[in-house]
Amino acid sequence: MENKENDVSSINEKEIMDFYGYKGMSGSLVLKFRFLRTWILHSLAYSSVHSGFAIKMQRVRGVTIGNNCHISPYVLIDLVYPSLIRIGDNVTIGSNTLIFAHANPTANLSLKRNGYPRKVEPVTIKSGAVLFPGSIITAGVTIGENSLVSAGSVVFESIPDNCVVLGNPARVVKRTKE
Image (cartoon, one colour):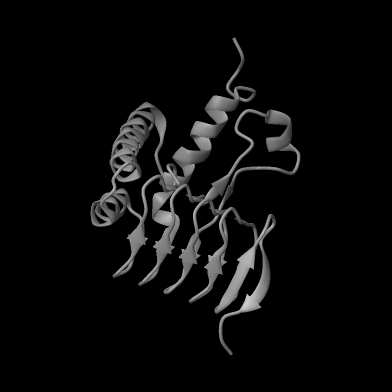
């Protein structure tokens, strides 16, 4: 049996427990129940065709969501760190969009120890932004106010206000207004 220093699953659990301030066996149990709860709420939101219900479930998970937003079905919002996602007012999120507040080479101990540790950073989607279907938003990114993220774009860097971005990696192709 591997020791805990080389067991990637134990290392991942410890990183998450440290983030939430949990310790010991009781903390591990609380973390498991927390994930079960967030997974159930996410599952209800993920498959809902009613945007209002999806938003309500995401808010209960801890996602901050403003007024007059629309979340399409099949949107995945970070399952481990939902409280790090902040969505402004009048935001539209298209189907099959992925929003992550963390990145982690979970199964590769060598990468974790040699320059690619768990990255946990908030994601902010400012008011009026539109994420078209299939967008991927990564940890630490801010999507600017009234900006449009084209379908299938992968956003690794923050996007200024009033921009249209597309591609992988997403790049600004147009300003929406001056």
